Length: 178
Ligand SMILES: Cc1cc2nc3c(=O)[nH]c(=O)nc-3n(C[C@H](O)[C@H](O)[C@H](O)COP(=O)(O)O)c2cc1C
Image 1 (cartoon, rainbow, N blue to C red):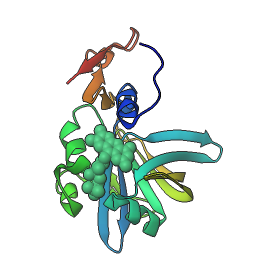
Image 2 (image 1 turned 45 degrees about the vertical axis):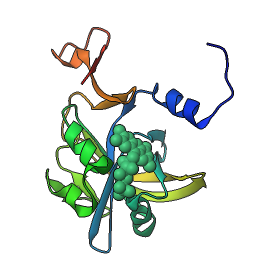
Image 3 (image 1 turned 180 degrees about the vertical axis):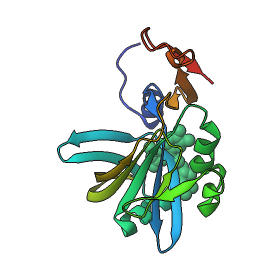
Image 4 (image 1 turned 60 degrees about the vertical axis):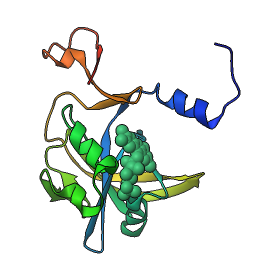
């Protein structure tokens, strides 16, 4: 296919080709819990321990992160598709926290007790760009409760790594779409 000038549709099609880990970003503000599904999460540097998240300014969680100055990135496990769908819009408000066990860690943001990993972050920098804000979070605490396969999202579908099916991590990973 020839090189094509970028359009909104081409951007969306191109972004579908990124395979991403699925996370739930949470924040607590004025006694209310907020959370949303996000794949736009990236490691920045280990020194100081920092990650970034990109959040649409129209998402309810956006303003909660701004107000709290903190957020938690909960890395989902293969099998957490329903939870991802709830936090992706299937449920609203604090109803999203009705299932699963949530605990409060250092910053006060809710952490998913059974996440693959939970990174509790203090916002150190926020950069608005277009529709989104990029939040840089200094990681203050980290829970690594489980080991195992992450929940992935690619080509608009949930997926997991096939090598994790039988626990054999020595052979190359294949994608298994759900
Ligand atoms: C797999 C998946 C990945 C998503 N990634 C992001 C993301 O990185 N950033 C973002 O702002 N929204 C992302 N969304 C959309 C939000 O989760 C969705 O708009 C959510 O409903 C926002 O919360 P609200 O309804 O409280 O506004 C994603 C949704 C799904 C299902």
